[in-house]
Structures are given as C-alpha cells and as structure tokens.
Length: 259
Image 1 (cartoon, rainbow, N blue to C red):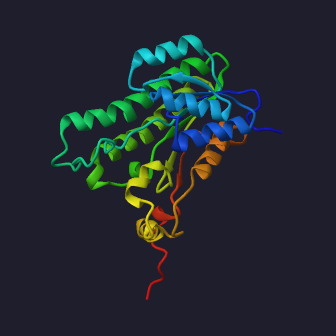
Image 2: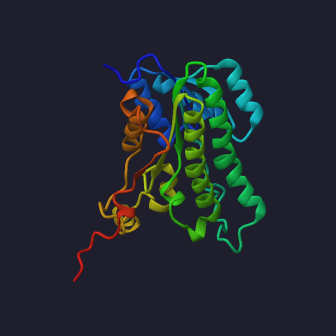
Image 3: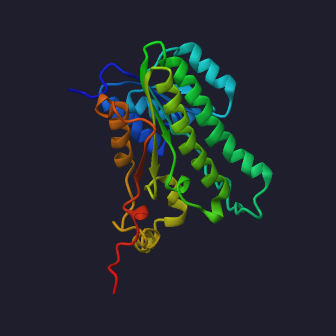
C-alpha cells in the first residue's frame, strides 16, 4: 500500500534539488502534490514532469501564503524546503565580521521568515482535521557554526528551534499535528556543480569535499526524500519535535581509530 495515498501535500522550493526529489517520492507514494516555487518556469516544468500541480510561491511574502491558503485551506503535509545560502549571486562575504545587514536579512527572509509563515499556514490548514505533518528543512549547518556562512547557519538553527516550538504548541492544543526538522549535510544537488565542474578532476574534487565525512561520499536527494516520506506518513506518528540528520556520520565524530 502506498504510504501517502490520498494525502494532500504541499512542498516549497520544489523546482529542483531536494524539493523536486521530495515531490517525486510523494507522488510515487500516492499523494496529491502541490509543488511550489518562486521560479515559475522551472516549477511549471518540474510539476509537469512529475505529475504535480504547480503554484507560484515566494515563501518570504505573506501575501503569497494567503493566496495559497485561499486555494488550499486544508492540507495533510507541508514540507518547508525552500531556502537560500546567500551565495546565489556569486562569491559574497558572509562571515560574522563582514557580512552586511542586507545580506543577513535576505537569507533570513527566505529561510527563517519563510519557515515561520509556512508553519503558521500549516497549523491553520491542519487543525480542522486535528492531524498532519510539518517537515522543516534545516541543515547540518543549523547544528554547528559555519564561519563563512553565518547568516545561513543562523537561519537553519532558527528553523531547528522553531520546529520544536511548533511541535509543542500543536501538542499543547491536543492536535496530532507533528513538526520535525531534517538536517542534511553534503547532498549532491545543482548547488555543488560550480565547485565540481565537469573536468577530469571532478571525482577528485568530490572526494576532497567529503574527506571529513566518515562515509566518504555525498548524500543523494533521494535519501533525503525517503526520510521525508517517513515523516509524512503514519509510520512516524509518535515522532514530533525531533531533528533527523543525514550527514554520513559527520556529527558522530571521527572515524579514525586512535593510535
């Protein structure tokens, strides 16, 4: 039996990468999926390819969420996946000393505000049925400091904490609305392509980037999507306020044996 049969699932940032893989996995499990993205061209193309419905959504805009809520006042699952690193427009300085306030706010507007608005929408859209699943995409960077990406790391840490507040609020109200966060580390998505290139040294570059990861490889978008299927399904009915890491053992410590 398909794990998400008949469920209405909304996924933000679904045009590419992890979001697209989540949409694909949800459709395969029988869900009706609404793929949202601020990139209308890519979002429309991905939705058509996967068999989803597409809706344009800038997660940082409250008005966009209100439009979505008017069309989908009741849902079963929301994946708050949309996010930015702050480096999309080229090499920018994001360390704690030199990052500009404008850059800081831009990252938080999408990552932090977008997740807040998504959770608020989901609570209202799920409380009628009294149950549902909210999945917030945080990061390994939300669990440790990242000196060169201070805004991104802080935003992902905020998502981790807000997840717990939402989970407790829902439980406090007697709703079986669960809220959990996912914390991927190095997942092979298009964001890595500029660093990897397509030259003969691509494999060497990939190995260098995951040299400190105990499992010595990148994770795949399909592996993240599989975890999201679990969190969206009744299989995880007793899990809320939890944080799940997919990091190849990175946060476990060193795989090297002491001499």
